[in-house]
Image (cartoon, rainbow, N blue to C red; front, side, top):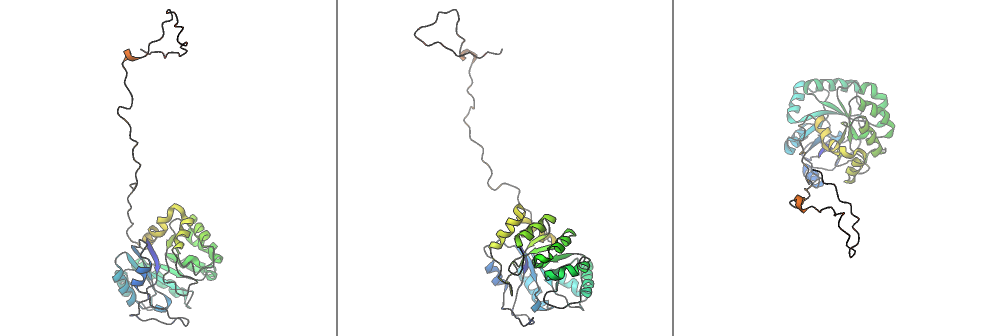
Amino acid sequence: MFDSHVHIIDPRFPLVENQGYLPEPYTIGDYRKRMAHFDVDGGAVVSASFQGTDSTFMIAALAELGPNWVGVINLPSDVTDEQIIELDRAGVRAIRFNLKRAAVDIVTLTMQAVRAYELAGWHVELYIDGSMLGSLEPVISKLPALSIDHMGMSDECLPYLLNLVDRGARVKASGFGRVSMDVESAMRRVHAVNPGALMFGSDLPGNRAGRPFRDADIEIIGRAVGADMYRVLEDNARACYRLPVKVRSAEDPVPTLPIPRAEPPTLRLRRSELPQPPNRNQPPNRDQPPDRTRPLRIIE
């Protein structure tokens, strides 16, 4: 499993109050304990609004988590080319635009996104309220590469979301406790437009969500995409973050066993042992019932 949306809140690093809110710590140890019964072997650490543009926590988290983990970061407006390249070396693979919880200049952000894409191949991850997606679609559609957080948040945005998916945008199947939509139906429609679009994310710890991630959310994804679960739980995100594709064995783990048969399969009879046709010239034996069996013709 690849978890494409995780927030790590490490108290060793600075936090910025956002709309009067500061979260409780949520460390890598907390995350590993919560997801211990899942086979998580990679993911994306995402900068939250209360982490501002600090990159120190991100570099530390990626170093501890290992090479199968990547970062999605908020960049300051005055970030240099050299800083973007250095963050890329540390494992950052995308830039996040939080349009839901902060007032931003979308034109400036677009220019920043183009620069990050040209320098390091980063895509943009957009956290946006569904009601805004339609009005910003003309600008958003010009971004070189794009992912939408939390399914776009509402059914209201679904027509615009599907249009972006048709143009190559990815969509995070995450934050089910944040959205006001029929998640299963929306995922089914996104998957029908592009089976490579959906990417699972737990959104842990789920700060300010109506509810955090539940194990049952995996079942909802399964009902929506069926046999393509591996794509949504891992393969699509690995492709999006430019990580090696996970090779799976094509061998049947429980192969069908051959049916045992006796040897030899067929009894071999000599010609002399074959039943002989009755002698029509011999008088019938009245003590035996008449033989009405028609003998098989012997082919020479």
